[in-house]
Image 1 (tube, rainbow over the protein chains, first blue to last red):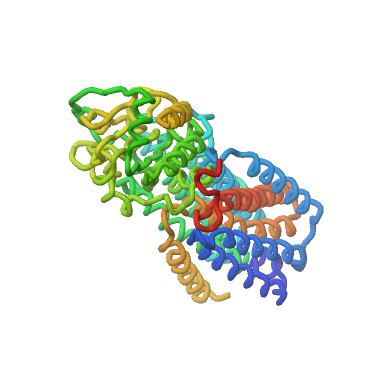
Image 2 (image 1 turned 135 degrees about the vertical axis):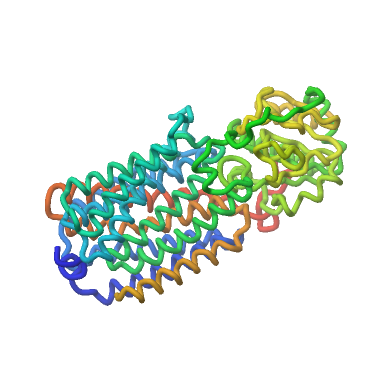
Amino acid sequence: MPGAGTSVFPGTDTLIQASYFVTAVLFILGLKRMSSPVTARSGILWAGAGMLVATLVTFAYPGMSNYPLIGAAIVLGGALAWWTGKRVAMTNMPQMIALYNGMGGGAAAAIAAVELYRGGAGGYGEATLAVVGGLIGAVSFSGSAVAFGKLQGLIKRSFRFRGQQALNLLLLAAALLHAALLAGHFNDSPRVVTGLFAFALILGVSMTLPIGGADMPVVISLYNALTGLAVGLDGFVMHNAAMIVAGTVVGAAGTLLTQLMAKAMNRSIANVLFSGFGDTGTGPAGTVTGSLKPIEASDVGVMLAFAQKVIIVPGYGMAVAQAQHKIWELCQLLIDRGVTVRFAIHPVAGRMPGHMNVLLAEAGVPYDLIADLEEINAEFETTDVALIIGANDVVNPVARTDKSSPIYGMPILNADRAKNVIVIKRGQGAGFSGIENALFYLDNTRMLYGDARKAGAELIQAVKAVG
Amino acid sequence: MTGIVALYIFMLAAFTGYEVIARVPVILHTPLMSGSNFVHGIVLVGAMVALGNAHTPLEKTIGFIGVLLAAGNAMGGYVVTERMLEMFKSSRAGGKRPGAR
């Protein structure tokens, strides 16, 4: 192919370029609006308008054929995604984002593959962009698919074995070797192209399999950034400004978000990717003294009903039990009694940053009752009851005290400083990290065992019984 | 587009992405991740052009898969983000008051 700029993209129609420009502006403004709760709703509408404009004018792209195929693929892919997106429960949002993100990565890889199979993209520069974009897109595709499988419960185990990092390095080296052959036009044969994508796809799988569920938010965010980057690189290959701007913006934003999340867990991105959680702490998982003290729902009801201030700390257990509606119902009862109720959200509570906020919003909790870690941590000392619902590691005080603990240094919610701590928990097991939680053994802590939704219903009855 | 201009666009777009997200409150992290996931669904236009210029059966097959996946990214990203953001409301802005039930 004599340069992507001539045969594949003849002429630059002014209308199309102008439309892509408008799309890029709408995307940036849309993302900006999505970063404030007041305007967030309109942000996605703006971005959606941009996408619609870009898609429609692309049908008018000069020199195109295969329109029936294009139309069929859009209708089929769009309908499937619309159907699944509308049906999925709010608790399953994280894996859906992983899934749709993986599809984007796969599309970016497919674009690069078409260019490369056609005989290599133009000059060295464009060929390099195409192979790197294809490589990143393919890794994001298969990696996101594994992340989806893990969160959806299709893949239950974390596969770890000795020499795993060495294997990943070998896979990466093999993929890079093929990439170099193509980028330098040393060997543009289809076999090399196939090799590149095969190694990249296997690398994505083998990188993601050993990573535990607790780290998945960081991983999904990273793959989101990688897909953005791949789209941006493809944009350079295809001389498409909308793709360049949108892809790069997402790449940068996603990278920052990934860093913020890794920081909130007190881990580096490299640490998340290259060591399973728990591998870092070699000593015995903390020495905890004291005993677990169970309590009945009726007693908790009285405690809550006569409290002045209650802080709710939700975690993944609330998501699993779909307890957010019951919990909000309970809170409304308390608010009616004059109790001050607030929700404290740890940055990595649940499986994604903001996961809890989405669930609480679904249940109808106004967002001004919901507070971040920095905002609310000082308030625990003046709180009568801290109600922990299926949260564990994010309230474990050993993060402040025990230097040998893998979570040492992670910012936590200071729930242990409340006058009373009630922990709603299904069983006596440790949290996702496998670390014993010192909070559960404190003198001011009581354990209310049971499924969070059932416990919520019991608490509602108990508070009502107080009258 | 010359290489250096492309590099400038890349640099400026990267800073834009960084700045846009720098001030986002934690409660919007998941919707924003979902929203940015939707935005890279723009890969759809690239996939459309790639399929539109495909000739061999292999190119057409890969191109078709590309458009299919990209449409899924864009549509799924939009639906999911919209559903999440729909639920954000303040208690002052006409949300259901406590005690309504």
